[in-house]
Length: 362
Image (cartoon, rainbow, N blue to C red; front, side):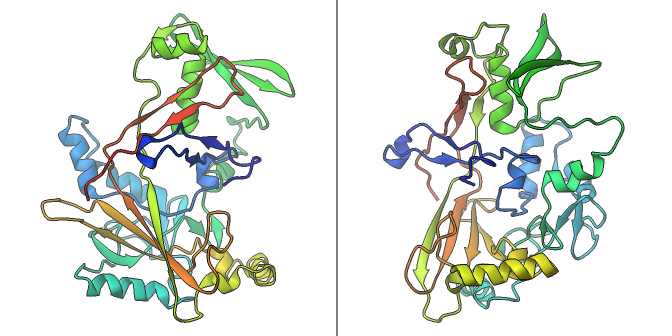
């Protein structure tokens, strides 16, 4: 994140709910998309999230309908059971399984002492409670969409991967997509489709491409100077994200990862990882977590905690002198909604995410 080679470096509009501040909005600019730069935390969501979708009219998206696909996609370190998959392409594990720092277990015990339950597997039968956190890591290596899927398919005769390109727009014949236009080495080229065009550029890139192609809200396209091909008001609307805040504390004992943020320690960690794919380089360091209901009357957890045995910034630098740790708290299902909008016809111009941060009662 924050590297122009691997991150689109988007920023949101100024947010009224954050006192006018603009937020960094990382998106993966690399094979595998954002799964290649994210925090690798593996959370399926609560079963009631999916059941609620079906209750609202989306047939076939209940938890019992989705669970077989979760299992099919996953290779869990503990093997297959009623809830976890054992032979899928996406490897999931507990990193170092809380063995390299005592604060992970201390965080779980603190949650239990505060009156919350423990959970053996929040992706299994019981999400609610405090327990170990899971991540998409395969023997010390990030299990991104690229590593899990593309690497296994790239040698197929029916797949061609073209790198270093920027798609300009979808080509249309009437209201039918017939191909795409892209730029490579400062040259514009086209690819025509035999059957269909699939956009998989994520929650930002896909609506951006549709709008650049003249598909979207008429007022947005007119303002951006793009000729309307098909008015579709929903394109770029209903953007949802779960923001976090994190709380940092000084630690009374010198046992946190803050002692590892110097170049010498990081070099040793890197050497161990290069040689053995183990140690502190083989985890995202979020190895314990919690899911709670913040008040009475809520049916399933609405708050998620990540615990990190270090007090640091997102750029990897210490945020305090001495030792510290931090707890991330996020709302699972915020009610605020935002949008993605282009402001000109240039595909190289960054789209503008609007992510309203509304007051939330927890």
